Length: 310
Length: 266
Image (spheres, rainbow over the protein chains, first blue to last red):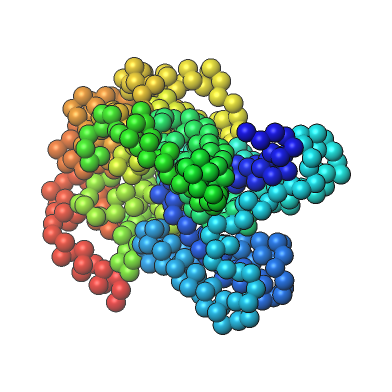
């Protein structure tokens, strides 16, 4: 294993960003999964493309803030379109998401091709895998740098941004925990008690969108898509309580991020190869393996005594 | 017979009746598509009694209840609860939705579902104290489910799930109880347990309204009936409104409904 002198500048920040991104997506993912809206993560990571392209066309620069605003704007437009199509067409949310995210993604690709943006670094690879490995902290010299204000000033900007996003996600869920739980289980009943379920549902989706856009910017869409679904789904099969499910999903998200990052860096070397593989890809793969294992061996993977069909 | 009342204009007597009524509905129309599911319905629930809402499948029974509670948006209509707007009176209403309307695989225990009934008392962030748990346990005991408090809800039979829903409504400590098909697909023991709880509520002066599908038990269980087939067919005591003639109108072939709709659109 590396010592502090190598670990802190090269691996600590990408690992932390990976962990924060994974948890920020997994937390709202728990509720989206139970509401049968898990695909929203997939949808958001597709629809941000036109938002990013439009932001570039307007601002003329590849800088983080216009990109994130564009992405967030596109996510909100998509969420509203999905809701509108679901209500007007009276179809299930999955179908509405499918229609919206393929259309907006295609629109983004067209925009990309028809404008000058294709010459700049807005390529598919970047969007999919992100650049987790490049988010290093070169000013750090070891663990002592964590206490050095000068070195801390040069932390990759993605780290505080992702940490802030995670705090926001945690606050939303902690504040609305009880209302979210009731309205996810029984929306009609929640309404009779005066819970504004539509606003709450929209708040949840917007929270998920913010997490997705921040994570997308830092680590690419593969992690976003995987983390919305795999840790919560695996966690559901470990416990029969929502509190437990949330805890397990956070644990699984952390394990995926750490193990995935380490395996991506060292796995190929251990197997006799020479190059590292994509950390984002490996993190998503690890979360998928965790899901597969819990689907096979998890203690709560089947309904115990419920009569069939009810 | 009260059927006549539907078209009379509101007199002072009626205003007084509405002010006293636990649930009064005026001109309620609900539509899911082009065809109204509930058309211009008036209902005045009598306090301290048990009322059954009866009608054929697709007659708008559940829809009327959901619209009255603000769960589905009505096209038009006015709802008053104990003489005031619904939003001011939410704490006085307990609601039991259809059992099939929720996912029983949801990761939660029986006691947690009953505690949901205390939401208005607890608020968004209030801590659940021992007294709240004791209250929830007491409600579970009243429906004979005290031994199941720690079970995951998916492990219960249909009848047990229905009793848990009733316990959650009891925890709400309301004055008006609205139940959507509580006897659908439950075992005989559960049906007996539920009806005995509902009767004890009535004895305590509470008002109970039940969407009901079993015509055979109406006379035995209820004081009043409300017959609906998209429009109100009849409303009154069981003796008044639950007659062959009214049932004939409510259930006698769908032709009647279509004709009514055509007239309504013309």
